[in-house]
Image (tube, rainbow, N blue to C red):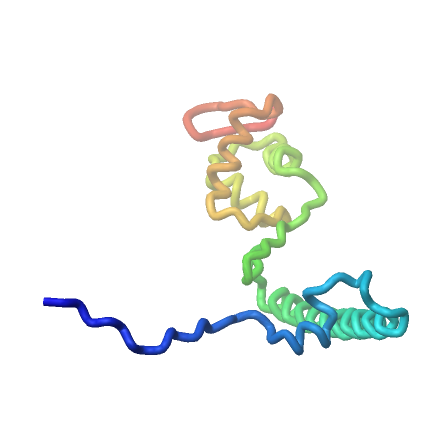
Length: 155
């Protein structure tokens, strides 16, 4: 049996690129070297206008973000975590080891109690495993002495 020949038309390719007319109008797709001075001035003006528009939009969005951050802070915040993939790390006046030394001065406490006491004293963290971080700091830093299992004091 012989195969039939395809008689249909070829399908037209669908392009996702800008049309040639809109590309010419925006100056895209061709080198700026071939443009006249007046065309270059128009293109420069168009780009400056676009830049000013984007700067205004950025400023508006920054103001909105600041308002949301203030509202979050008033509600207790998210512990330094910001939604949208950007994480704002809380900044402390003292590092963790210094804060631990201040809390443990002339006291013996468990890791859990000292981690809670440091946070009550004003140390801010966004760590989900803060107790583990405190434990590692107590073990590694020479300013702290292990009294018994899970109990530490400052030297």
